[in-house]
Structures are given as structure tokens and as C-alpha cells.
Image 1 (cartoon, rainbow, N blue to C red):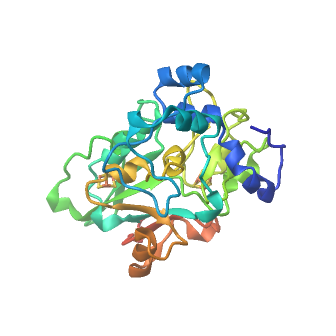
Image 2 (cartoon, rainbow, N blue to C red; image 1 turned 90 degrees about the horizontal axis):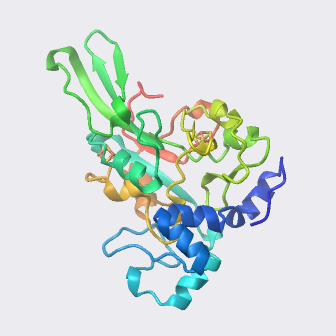
Image 3 (tube, helix red, strand yellow; image 1 turned 135 degrees about the horizontal axis):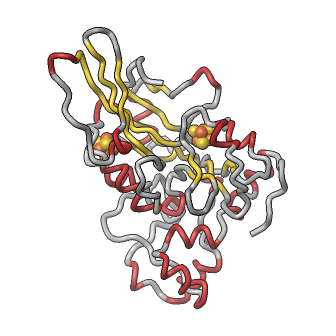
Length: 296
Ligand code: SF4
Ligand code: SF4
């Protein structure tokens, strides 16, 4: 993996995207911890997902079968985990149908498990907010433990309506977090995902302060910036993010904006789409349908 120069241009950052998702980060997010060391020592690569897993839009190599994969292929994957994946062929985004979210929190749990997010109730890559619009005109927003265990009932008599809003990094096309990073550790990939290179993050927190969506946190152990990656380690294998896969109501739709027949593109055509804090010109790539005006 080549080192990105501090202050590198966005074009430079784009062209270095695949290099920046280095072998170490890729493996650390793709394999159980013990396997990472084993893979490093033996040169073996990861085996890919099980049967029935959903796939991202137009994947190059949606592989399956896990343990049966031939060793030479596994070694090749370890040498270059992104072999066969062409980021220029994708433009990823996520849509969220607010009317479908039931606030069960299974997506939050799936994200924590998939990405080894610390279990403490203030570290989240994705979380659910409940909006309770009261008869007195007030709106109360809560997110107990990120909504990971659902929400307590509210008094029926007090409320006009209630709804749930899943939140995460918006993978902005014009991301303030990238602009303020002094060492180029946070960057935008060619396929439209905003990532952090933990090898170069110095934990200065500038990006955390710059993000208008509260989508980042400092990892308590690594002391580097953390956020949603759209489960990039899954995308390059043709899989959708873990939160999308686990949602029982299909409230989250993931795919390729440029693939006209993808579920995401169809969803976009069939719904009035809104984004959060659109006036900030961050150009979010998390697209909401049926979003109430109360939400920001
Ligand atoms: Fe960066 Fe925040 Fe936008 Fe994500 S939502 S890309 S962390 S500014
Ligand atoms: Fe909403 Fe789906 Fe998450 Fe449940 S899993 S909280 S329905 S987005």
C-alpha cells in the first residue's frame, strides 16, 4: 500500500482508493481475529459468504461456497484482496424507506457484530432515532443505546405520530470530513464510499467535528476515527452491507446508482427522495423516502 500524501487532491485520493484499502485493513475486517494472524503468516486469503446472502448491484465476483474455495485462489485473494473488483464500475448509495422501519434495531446489532464496533452505548456506525410528535406540538427524539434493543412504548394519548429514522454516515459526495483531514487519512473512493485509512489517522478529531451528521467517533482502543464503511469489505465481494441484509422489513435498500435496473435505482425512481441537511451542500448518498419534515 502506498502512503497518501498529506493534502492530496480529491482526484489523487480517488485514484488511490483501491490501494488505500490495504491488505491489513481488509483482512482485519474480513476475518476473525485469529485468522488474520494465520493469513499473515501463511499467505492464505479469506473465504467468502454463505448461501442466500444478498448481493450488491452488479458485482464482478459474488463468490460463495467458503471452505471449498481452492487454495491458489485464496492465496491470490490474500495477495490482492481487491483482485477482480473494479471500483470505476460502481456508484454506491443506500436508500431508507422510513415508512418501513419498525425500530427493531437488528441493523444496529448486525453492524456492531460485523464491524467489531465497541459494545458501549456511545459507539455506533449506524443507529436508529425514534421521533415522537406530541399533541402539544413538541417532538421528542430518542435513541436508547442506538435503538439496538428496540424502544420502550410511549403513552398513546400523548402522541400524534411516531416514526423511526435509521442513521449512518451519508457517504457525502462533497464530504467536509475529507476536506479537513490534515493527513489525508479519510478519503473518498472511486465507487462513492468515504473511508478512513487507520494506518495514517492521527486521531486529531477534526473530521469528527466537521461531520454535520454526528456519524464519526474515536475508537477507544485504536484512537483513530471510525464510521460506517458501507461494509466495504463485503461490497468488494459482491455482498450488501450487514445492516441491509439483516433488516426484516427491507427498510434499507443498497445498490448502484448508475445501474438503472438495480433495486436502489428503481426505488429512487418510485419515491420522492430527500437527504439530511441538504442545505449544507454535502450531497449525501443516503437517500430517504417518506421522511417527515421534523427530521434533520
Ligand atoms: Fe464525512 Fe459525516 Fe459526510 Fe460521513 S456523513 S461522509 S463522516 S461528513
Ligand atoms: Fe428499521 Fe430495518 Fe433497522 Fe429494524 S433492521 S430498525 S426495521 S432499518
